[in-house]
Figure 1 (cartoon, rainbow, N blue to C red):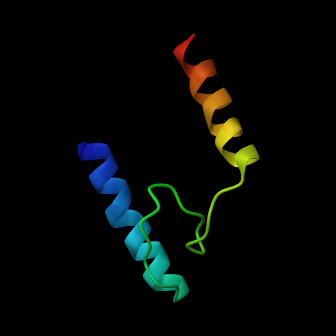
Figure 2: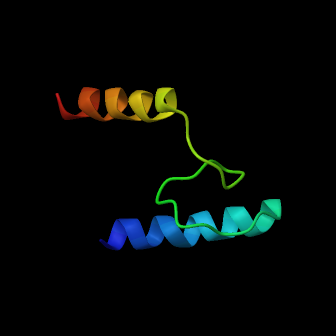
Length: 52
């Protein structure tokens, strides 16, 4: 939970910097919108590789 709280704070800073309103997305793009499925799949692949 601590990591998610830290991420939300960082995300809020990024959204404020880009001038976009905050939203309720846990993982939003730098511009405050939805992430593509490809981005999320890429993250998952990277995480799986680091676990091996």
